[in-house]
Length: 200
Length: 140
Ligand SMILES: Nc1nc2c(ncn2[C@@H]2O[C@H](COP(=O)(O)OP(=O)(O)OP(=O)(O)O)[C@@H](O)[C@H]2O)c(=O)[nH]1
Ligand SMILES: [Mg+2]
Image 1: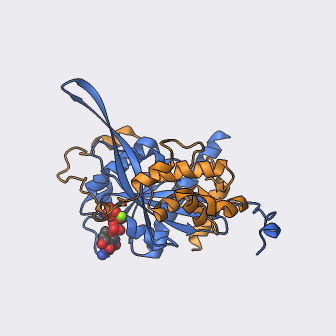
Image 2: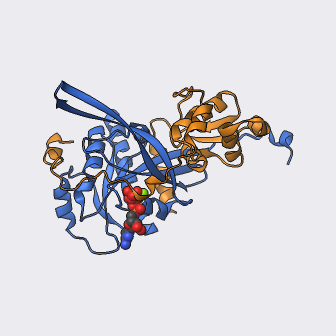
Image 3: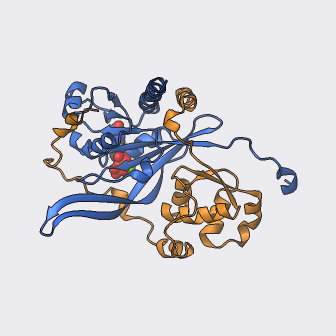
């Protein structure tokens, strides 16, 4: 192949990357979820996350800044000829909240995965997305078995806004994962439409 | 959103600690840190802002110059020679922290060895793109 003859060929439009975040406690099925829909086996990368915890100690009000390295799994789906959807799976890990600002920058929204036996593990992620107004859906990973609580009980335990969808999913199942992603995208689209009509 | 809705979450009363690290995290990539940081010449900030999902591809100039690039510079240009790859993918495949890829790739962009495909601005308001995305995911 000649470099010269190829040189003028510049794609009119390149790929369009979009991303969503898959959050939840440790071992809830984030990587499995990403892998169920990804074109590539989930990859792992490291990112520095800065968290700020505020509190009062002997010397008065303090804001402690901690930088930790967090392993993040992610996958990639070619959605059509241009759109490439990235799914980033990352744990919520700080009792006092955590800063994912870098990751969440430009993200369409988040799927918060919940294990119904350990509902509270999802609280840091819920707090984070709520406080930043990031659209999210709650997906209870059934781990192939039965729910330990009814959807309504889980919703109540999570104490989330009634408008937030709470659904069940199977992180190992491609179609369940697809539906879960679609339910998030639906929320995102409806928000966009609401903002648009509000602006008119 | 109603702020009261979240207030009742027993945030600090959970019985379980959440901070046990994932199994694999101990492995890490211990060998890459020093050399990777050396090539950023001590800078922590990139000249061009790249998101995790920003995609990069070698330009014709970059492909020709790949052999002359050292360390991560050459690795990055070669890896995204045939297809565009995201910053996150480059980081994962090279076992180099994302921050380092950002700095090095920003230089390569500025020098014309790479071209970039950025995420759409205000994507959450882009009804057309969202509609297309939904149709595409549904058809997967
Ligand atoms: N039976 C069953 N096992 C599952 C399911 N989802 C995940 N698992 C298993 O649960 C374990 C944890 O799943 P991961 O996908 O690694 O969870 P994760 O949230 O990425 O975990 P960390 O990254 O360590 O926080 C793995 O052994 C999975 O195979 C499920 O739906 N059913
Ligand atoms: Mg994982």
